[in-house]
Length: 276
Image 1 (cartoon, rainbow, N blue to C red):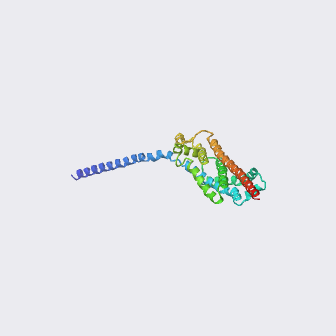
Image 2: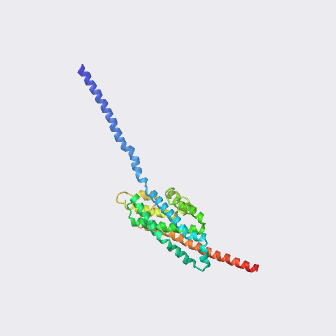
Image 3: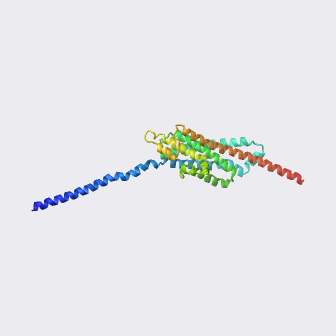
């Protein structure tokens, strides 16, 4: 009888242990199923657009703020008016100011690229990143010059910050390009935004070093980017076109100011002759 009772107890304990073991095994088998969602969602959470957006925002603000004094200070303190009255050609004055900005245009993206590589350590070549940041700096200087000749010295700083934020908002991070392209107005702002093309150049240049490891077709489709071999060069050209237009508009505004000042001076002289 004691042996029978002991045997029954052993059987009950064995059945209980087997039941608990099956439950633990079932939980272990279900655990990958719970992790399957985050693992499948990992390719969708791409950090490259966010990195490129903050990088372009930083170098863009640096360029716009640094370029304000070159033209704005002369206009504010009457240097441009005296140079214009003295017979200095506007084009020569503009070229001289542009050449005086060349050193900081070359140095600022180099320093930013070194800090950028030490922090993020991307796979793209340092030369490609430097050329991208150089194009962004050139464009940012163009818009900074344009703002400085249109607005006064105090308001130009606020205008530069707001303008760079608008360019960043239209770059396609939040909201994305699909949302921006639904409206013709936001589509136009996105197309003329140099931050949108700089961001695409950054992402495309970085992703081509992952093509042998991952299937990037879905990533390109989600971002609405092109995966062509020359897409990086195409985006860089668009950034430079935006900068060239901004620099050209700065020259046109200076020419317009000179014509307007000459017209006002002629009107004053005519008024004095009439009074006499």
